[in-house]
Image (tube, rainbow, N blue to C red; front, side):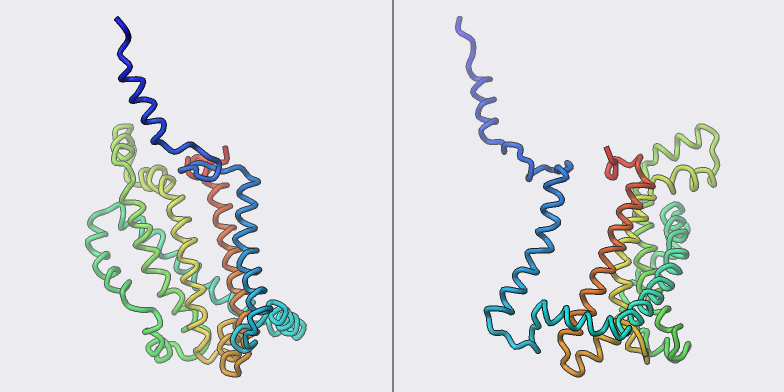
Length: 285
C-alpha cells in the first residue's frame, strides 16, 4: 500500500508559505556586527547627504535652511569665542543636577509603589494627576517661589522627570514574577531581603532603561528652563539666535544637544550591558 502523501504535501506547503530567514529580517536576534555598524553609519550619513543635496542644488534661502558648511562655520565661530563651551557646560550642569535628584527620589518611590499595593493606592492617584500637568506650566509658580536663579531651572527639570520615572519604575516592579517572591519567603527571606535581593536586581534593567528614556525629557525641559532669565545655556543660545534669524546657530545648538543626548544614551546602554549581564535581553553572548 503506497504511503499517504498528505503529510509531505502539507509540510512543503507550509515551507513555501513561511518566510526564508535572512540576516536583515531577524526577529529578536542579534545581527552581525558589520551589518550593525553599516546600518548605524547609514542612519547618520543619509540625512547629512540629503541635507547637503537640498542646500546645494535646491537654491534654498540660507536663513531658512543653512548648508552643512555654514553650520560648521558657525560652530567654529562659537567655539573659538568660548560661547558654545560656556553654554554647553551650563546646560549640562542644569540637566545633570535636576535629573540626578529626580532619579534619587523616583527610583526608591517607584520600587515601593510597585512592591506594596498600599503605597501604590496612596501615591498613584496623585502621581497620575501630576503626570498630566505640563511641567512648563509650573514656571510662573517656580519664579514666584524660587526667584530667577538656578533653582527654578533645576526644579523644572526635576518636576518633568520625577513623576514619569516613578510611574515607569512602578510598572516595571509590578511585573516581577510572584513565584520569585513566594520562593524567597519559603526559603526564609524577609521583606527587606525580597526588596534588595530579589525585586531590585530583577527590575534593574527596566530602571536603567526608564532612566535612559526620561533623560530625553530632561534635555527638552532645559530649553524651556533657560528662558527664565538665563545668561548662558544652549536653550538661551537657540532662543537668541532665533530672535536675530541666525539659523546656522540654531542648528549648532540643536546638533550639540542631539550629540550630547546620543552620547548619554550610548552610555546608558553600555551600563545596561555591563551591570546586567545576567539579563537575556542584554547578554553579551
